[in-house]
Image (tube, rainbow, N blue to C red; front, top):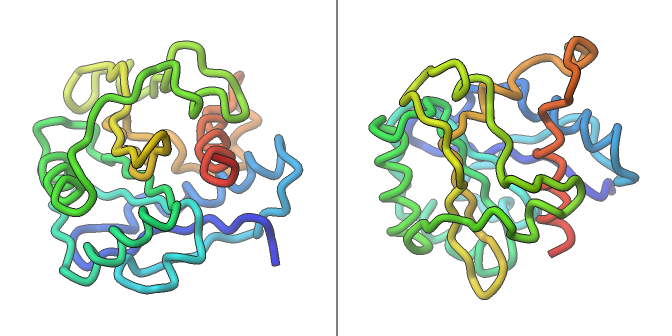
Length: 203
């Protein structure tokens, strides 16, 4: 049994599978930089399934409005209470967008309101060091979406542990390419994904 399996959340509303290459890219980063025994391929796990509890880190993204079912809410609430980390990334990178507004509503309804995560949080030192907090994406710098560079991620904490992390930075687009293309990058932009996984496994 591998140490880590990358899990993508499948939810009943919206387009949960909008960034299909993210899993392979983060898996590649984990294999490059860590000694974790990482499964070669990711899995899709329904948000309302008890199988969710098998995975300490779960990725959720999309463009369209998000409306969790009652079963999805109950399961996600229990997942967080058991120590899981759900990372939600807005594939629109637009704070006025439907995904953003509805995802915030659902997270608040399920586990509590989102608040800014300080940029000196241990998450930013879990493996690589990100002294300025969350790395900026090319989509922000190019003025796509809401034309903002988001200085913080948002989170819900239980105690000192992040259980839901939310991004308006569109890592879904930033990491949605074949890992072989990393050879064209001067800096591997999936390193932050490595931090997220290591944090989920070690906090």
